[in-house]
Length: 331
Image (tube, rainbow, N blue to C red):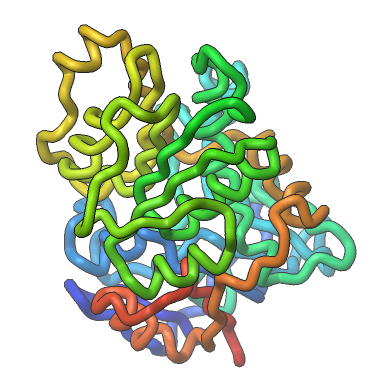
Protein backbone atom coordinates (compact mmCIF):
# COMPACT_ATOMS: atom_id res chain seq x y z
CA UNK A 1 0.00 0.00 0.00
CA UNK A 2 0.99 3.65 -0.28
CA UNK A 3 1.57 5.62 2.93
CA UNK A 4 2.93 8.94 4.09
CA UNK A 5 5.80 8.09 6.44
CA UNK A 6 7.50 10.36 8.96
CA UNK A 7 11.18 9.58 8.35
CA UNK A 8 13.09 12.40 10.03
CA UNK A 9 12.73 15.91 11.42
CA UNK A 10 10.96 18.07 8.80
CA UNK A 11 10.65 15.06 6.51
CA UNK A 12 7.76 12.85 5.46
CA UNK A 13 7.87 10.54 2.44
CA UNK A 14 5.06 9.14 0.32
CA UNK A 15 6.19 5.60 -0.37
CA UNK A 16 5.28 1.94 -0.55
CA UNK A 17 4.72 0.19 2.79
CA UNK A 18 3.66 -3.39 3.64
CA UNK A 19 -0.10 -3.93 3.84
CA UNK A 20 -1.24 -4.20 7.49
CA UNK A 21 -2.25 -7.65 8.71
CA UNK A 22 -5.17 -7.63 11.16
CA UNK A 23 -4.65 -9.64 14.33
CA UNK A 24 -7.42 -11.40 16.27
CA UNK A 25 -10.10 -8.87 17.17
CA UNK A 26 -8.87 -6.34 14.63
CA UNK A 27 -10.39 -5.10 11.39
CA UNK A 28 -8.74 -3.88 8.22
CA UNK A 29 -10.02 -0.43 7.25
CA UNK A 30 -9.59 1.41 3.97
CA UNK A 31 -8.89 5.04 4.85
CA UNK A 32 -11.09 7.54 2.99
CA UNK A 33 -10.04 10.76 4.75
CA UNK A 34 -7.49 11.67 7.44
CA UNK A 35 -6.67 15.05 8.97
CA UNK A 36 -3.27 16.49 9.90
CA UNK A 37 -3.26 17.21 13.64
CA UNK A 38 -1.07 19.60 15.58
CA UNK A 39 0.50 16.58 17.28
CA UNK A 40 1.52 15.27 13.85
CA UNK A 41 3.26 18.62 13.31
CA UNK A 42 5.03 18.28 16.69
CA UNK A 43 6.46 14.98 15.48
CA UNK A 44 7.40 16.56 12.14
CA UNK A 45 9.29 19.25 14.06
CA UNK A 46 11.16 16.58 16.04
CA UNK A 47 9.53 17.68 19.31
CA UNK A 48 7.67 14.52 20.28
CA UNK A 49 9.89 11.83 21.74
CA UNK A 50 6.97 9.38 21.68
CA UNK A 51 6.83 9.40 17.89
CA UNK A 52 10.03 7.83 16.60
CA UNK A 53 10.71 7.66 12.85
CA UNK A 54 10.12 5.82 10.64
CA UNK A 55 6.42 5.96 11.55
CA UNK A 56 3.11 6.36 9.77
CA UNK A 57 1.43 9.24 11.59
CA UNK A 58 -2.24 10.25 11.48
CA UNK A 59 -5.20 9.52 13.75
CA UNK A 60 -8.13 11.73 12.64
CA UNK A 61 -9.65 9.30 10.18
CA UNK A 62 -12.70 7.74 8.61
CA UNK A 63 -13.06 4.91 6.13
CA UNK A 64 -14.67 1.63 5.07
CA UNK A 65 -14.16 -1.70 6.83
CA UNK A 66 -12.63 -4.39 4.60
CA UNK A 67 -12.59 -7.40 6.94
CA UNK A 68 -14.32 -8.96 9.93
CA UNK A 69 -17.94 -8.79 11.08
CA UNK A 70 -18.24 -5.11 10.11
CA UNK A 71 -16.98 -5.57 6.55
CA UNK A 72 -18.56 -3.07 4.17
CA UNK A 73 -19.54 -0.59 6.88
CA UNK A 74 -18.37 3.01 6.79
CA UNK A 75 -16.82 4.04 10.09
CA UNK A 76 -15.08 6.71 12.11
CA UNK A 77 -11.97 5.54 13.91
CA UNK A 78 -11.63 5.97 17.64
CA UNK A 79 -7.84 6.33 17.62
CA UNK A 80 -7.45 5.81 21.36
CA UNK A 81 -6.77 2.15 22.15
CA UNK A 82 -7.37 1.27 25.81
CA UNK A 83 -7.46 -1.86 27.97
CA UNK A 84 -11.19 -1.65 28.77
CA UNK A 85 -10.69 -3.27 32.18
CA UNK A 86 -8.95 -0.77 34.47
CA UNK A 87 -10.66 1.62 36.86
CA UNK A 88 -10.42 4.53 34.43
CA UNK A 89 -11.95 2.54 31.58
CA UNK A 90 -14.73 1.08 33.72
CA UNK A 91 -15.61 4.50 35.13
CA UNK A 92 -16.09 6.01 31.67
CA UNK A 93 -12.74 7.81 31.55
CA UNK A 94 -10.93 5.55 29.11
CA UNK A 95 -8.77 8.49 27.99
CA UNK A 96 -6.94 8.14 31.33
CA UNK A 97 -6.21 4.42 30.91
CA UNK A 98 -2.67 3.66 32.08
CA UNK A 99 -2.23 1.34 29.09
CA UNK A 100 -3.66 3.76 26.51
CA UNK A 101 -2.18 3.90 23.05
CA UNK A 102 -2.93 6.24 20.17
CA UNK A 103 -2.64 5.16 16.57
CA UNK A 104 0.11 7.13 14.88
CA UNK A 105 2.08 7.53 18.10
CA UNK A 106 3.95 4.25 18.62
CA UNK A 107 1.86 2.10 16.30
CA UNK A 108 1.16 2.72 12.64
CA UNK A 109 -1.34 5.50 11.98
CA UNK A 110 -3.82 6.46 9.28
CA UNK A 111 -1.74 8.40 6.74
CA UNK A 112 -2.05 5.34 4.55
CA UNK A 113 -4.40 3.53 2.24
CA UNK A 114 -5.21 0.98 4.96
CA UNK A 115 -4.91 0.45 8.69
CA UNK A 116 -5.59 -2.41 11.12
CA UNK A 117 -7.43 -1.35 14.29
CA UNK A 118 -9.33 -3.10 17.08
CA UNK A 119 -12.96 -3.76 16.12
CA UNK A 120 -14.08 -2.03 19.33
CA UNK A 121 -12.54 1.19 17.98
CA UNK A 122 -14.92 1.37 15.01
CA UNK A 123 -17.73 3.91 15.35
CA UNK A 124 -20.60 3.76 12.83
CA UNK A 125 -20.72 6.65 10.39
CA UNK A 126 -24.26 8.00 9.98
CA UNK A 127 -25.89 7.33 6.63
CA UNK A 128 -25.25 10.20 4.25
CA UNK A 129 -22.29 11.58 6.20
CA UNK A 130 -19.26 12.25 4.03
CA UNK A 131 -15.84 10.84 4.87
CA UNK A 132 -14.23 14.29 5.02
CA UNK A 133 -16.77 15.61 7.52
CA UNK A 134 -16.47 12.38 9.54
CA UNK A 135 -12.69 12.82 9.77
CA UNK A 136 -13.32 15.94 11.87
CA UNK A 137 -14.80 13.79 14.64
CA UNK A 138 -11.57 13.49 16.62
CA UNK A 139 -10.76 17.23 16.93
CA UNK A 140 -14.45 17.98 17.52
CA UNK A 141 -14.48 15.45 20.37
CA UNK A 142 -11.33 17.01 21.81
CA UNK A 143 -12.95 20.45 21.92
CA UNK A 144 -16.24 19.03 23.19
CA UNK A 145 -14.51 17.10 25.99
CA UNK A 146 -12.66 20.22 27.16
CA UNK A 147 -15.80 22.36 27.19
CA UNK A 148 -17.79 19.68 28.98
CA UNK A 149 -15.20 19.53 31.77
CA UNK A 150 -14.97 23.32 32.00
CA UNK A 151 -18.75 23.63 32.27
CA UNK A 152 -18.67 21.48 35.42
CA UNK A 153 -16.72 24.13 37.33
CA UNK A 154 -17.82 27.41 35.71
CA UNK A 155 -19.99 29.39 38.08
CA UNK A 156 -22.26 30.54 35.24
CA UNK A 157 -23.57 28.88 32.07
CA UNK A 158 -21.38 29.13 28.97
CA UNK A 159 -24.27 30.96 27.28
CA UNK A 160 -23.68 33.79 29.77
CA UNK A 161 -19.89 33.59 29.78
CA UNK A 162 -17.25 35.68 28.08
CA UNK A 163 -14.76 33.30 26.48
CA UNK A 164 -11.23 33.77 25.15
CA UNK A 165 -9.81 31.12 22.81
CA UNK A 166 -6.06 31.05 22.27
CA UNK A 167 -5.26 29.41 18.94
CA UNK A 168 -7.27 29.47 15.72
CA UNK A 169 -6.59 25.97 14.47
CA UNK A 170 -9.31 23.38 14.10
CA UNK A 171 -9.75 22.77 17.84
CA UNK A 172 -9.95 26.50 18.57
CA UNK A 173 -12.52 27.10 15.83
CA UNK A 174 -14.49 23.98 16.78
CA UNK A 175 -14.56 25.13 20.41
CA UNK A 176 -15.93 28.47 19.24
CA UNK A 177 -18.57 26.78 17.08
CA UNK A 178 -19.63 24.50 19.94
CA UNK A 179 -19.87 27.47 22.28
CA UNK A 180 -21.89 29.42 19.73
CA UNK A 181 -24.28 26.47 19.40
CA UNK A 182 -24.67 26.58 23.21
CA UNK A 183 -25.76 30.22 22.97
CA UNK A 184 -22.48 31.90 23.87
CA UNK A 185 -22.22 35.25 22.09
CA UNK A 186 -19.09 36.72 23.68
CA UNK A 187 -16.23 34.77 22.11
CA UNK A 188 -12.81 36.23 21.29
CA UNK A 189 -10.24 34.18 19.34
CA UNK A 190 -6.57 34.92 18.75
CA UNK A 191 -4.06 33.40 16.33
CA UNK A 192 -0.62 34.55 15.19
CA UNK A 193 -1.10 33.27 11.61
CA UNK A 194 -2.63 35.94 9.36
CA UNK A 195 -4.10 33.44 6.91
CA UNK A 196 -5.77 31.43 9.66
CA UNK A 197 -7.14 34.61 11.22
CA UNK A 198 -8.76 35.48 7.91
CA UNK A 199 -10.33 32.03 7.63
CA UNK A 200 -11.46 32.06 11.26
CA UNK A 201 -13.06 35.47 10.74
CA UNK A 202 -14.99 34.13 7.76
CA UNK A 203 -16.54 31.46 9.99
CA UNK A 204 -18.16 34.26 12.03
CA UNK A 205 -17.98 32.32 15.27
CA UNK A 206 -15.83 34.78 17.22
CA UNK A 207 -14.22 38.19 17.32
CA UNK A 208 -10.77 37.49 15.85
CA UNK A 209 -7.61 39.36 16.86
CA UNK A 210 -3.86 39.34 16.25
CA UNK A 211 -1.92 38.51 19.46
CA UNK A 212 1.14 40.33 18.07
CA UNK A 213 -0.84 43.57 17.84
CA UNK A 214 -2.60 43.61 21.20
CA UNK A 215 -3.67 41.51 24.16
CA UNK A 216 -7.28 41.03 25.27
CA UNK A 217 -8.76 42.59 28.38
CA UNK A 218 -6.93 41.67 31.59
CA UNK A 219 -9.14 39.64 33.93
CA UNK A 220 -11.91 40.00 31.37
CA UNK A 221 -12.92 36.39 30.67
CA UNK A 222 -14.90 33.78 32.56
CA UNK A 223 -13.29 31.01 30.52
CA UNK A 224 -9.97 30.90 28.66
CA UNK A 225 -9.46 27.97 26.29
CA UNK A 226 -5.76 27.45 25.55
CA UNK A 227 -5.70 25.43 22.34
CA UNK A 228 -1.97 26.12 21.86
CA UNK A 229 -0.44 25.13 25.18
CA UNK A 230 2.78 27.17 25.13
CA UNK A 231 4.46 29.17 27.86
CA UNK A 232 3.39 32.39 26.17
CA UNK A 233 -0.27 31.37 25.88
CA UNK A 234 -0.34 30.16 29.47
CA UNK A 235 0.93 33.60 30.48
CA UNK A 236 -1.86 35.25 28.46
CA UNK A 237 -4.43 32.92 29.99
CA UNK A 238 -3.21 33.80 33.50
CA UNK A 239 -3.49 37.49 32.69
CA UNK A 240 -6.90 37.40 31.01
CA UNK A 241 -8.99 35.05 33.17
CA UNK A 242 -11.16 36.80 35.75
CA UNK A 243 -11.00 35.98 39.49
CA UNK A 244 -12.95 32.77 40.01
CA UNK A 245 -12.73 31.91 36.32
CA UNK A 246 -11.50 28.81 34.50
CA UNK A 247 -8.52 28.07 32.27
CA UNK A 248 -9.13 25.10 29.97
CA UNK A 249 -5.74 23.79 28.78
CA UNK A 250 -5.87 21.60 25.67
CA UNK A 251 -2.68 22.29 23.71
CA UNK A 252 0.66 20.56 24.18
CA UNK A 253 2.96 22.90 22.28
CA UNK A 254 5.67 23.04 24.96
CA UNK A 255 6.31 22.76 28.69
CA UNK A 256 7.85 26.20 29.19
CA UNK A 257 7.06 28.46 32.19
CA UNK A 258 4.19 30.90 31.82
CA UNK A 259 1.38 29.85 34.09
CA UNK A 260 1.07 32.34 36.97
CA UNK A 261 0.31 30.02 39.87
CA UNK A 262 0.33 32.93 42.36
CA UNK A 263 -2.51 34.59 40.44
CA UNK A 264 -4.34 31.26 40.21
CA UNK A 265 -4.09 30.84 43.97
CA UNK A 266 -4.97 34.38 45.05
CA UNK A 267 -7.86 34.64 42.58
CA UNK A 268 -9.19 31.08 43.01
CA UNK A 269 -8.86 30.33 39.31
CA UNK A 270 -9.48 26.75 38.20
CA UNK A 271 -6.91 25.29 35.80
CA UNK A 272 -8.00 22.10 34.02
CA UNK A 273 -5.83 19.99 31.75
CA UNK A 274 -7.62 17.96 29.09
CA UNK A 275 -6.39 14.88 27.22
CA UNK A 276 -8.26 13.63 24.16
CA UNK A 277 -11.86 12.44 24.80
CA UNK A 278 -14.04 9.59 25.97
CA UNK A 279 -16.06 7.28 23.70
CA UNK A 280 -19.19 9.25 24.59
CA UNK A 281 -17.46 12.47 23.48
CA UNK A 282 -16.70 10.88 20.11
CA UNK A 283 -20.32 9.79 19.66
CA UNK A 284 -21.53 13.29 20.59
CA UNK A 285 -19.05 14.78 18.13
CA UNK A 286 -20.33 12.58 15.30
CA UNK A 287 -23.87 13.68 16.09
CA UNK A 288 -22.92 17.36 16.20
CA UNK A 289 -21.19 17.17 12.82
CA UNK A 290 -23.75 14.96 11.08
CA UNK A 291 -26.72 17.03 12.28
CA UNK A 292 -25.24 20.31 11.08
CA UNK A 293 -25.02 21.83 14.56
CA UNK A 294 -21.67 23.40 13.67
CA UNK A 295 -22.80 24.94 10.40
CA UNK A 296 -21.13 24.73 7.03
CA UNK A 297 -17.58 23.42 7.37
CA UNK A 298 -15.91 25.55 4.70
CA UNK A 299 -12.71 26.19 6.63
CA UNK A 300 -10.98 22.92 5.69
CA UNK A 301 -8.81 22.03 2.70
CA UNK A 302 -8.58 18.62 1.06
CA UNK A 303 -5.43 17.36 -0.64
CA UNK A 304 -4.30 14.01 -1.99
CA UNK A 305 -2.29 11.85 0.40
CA UNK A 306 0.40 11.81 -2.28
CA UNK A 307 0.73 15.58 -1.76
CA UNK A 308 1.10 15.18 2.00
CA UNK A 309 4.75 16.22 2.13
CA UNK A 310 3.87 19.60 0.62
CA UNK A 311 0.95 19.95 3.04
CA UNK A 312 3.32 19.46 5.98
CA UNK A 313 5.73 22.03 4.50
CA UNK A 314 2.93 24.55 4.01
CA UNK A 315 1.78 24.12 7.61
CA UNK A 316 5.36 24.40 8.85
CA UNK A 317 5.92 27.63 6.92
CA UNK A 318 2.57 29.15 7.87
CA UNK A 319 1.37 29.12 4.26
CA UNK A 320 -1.88 27.25 4.89
CA UNK A 321 -4.94 29.34 5.66
CA UNK A 322 -7.27 26.42 6.37
CA UNK A 323 -7.85 25.40 9.97
CA UNK A 324 -7.52 21.77 8.91
CA UNK A 325 -5.85 20.02 5.97
CA UNK A 326 -7.43 16.65 5.24
CA UNK A 327 -5.58 14.09 3.13
CA UNK A 328 -7.41 11.75 0.76
CA UNK A 329 -5.71 8.43 -0.12
CA UNK A 330 -5.94 7.31 -3.73
CA UNK A 331 -6.96 10.72 -5.07
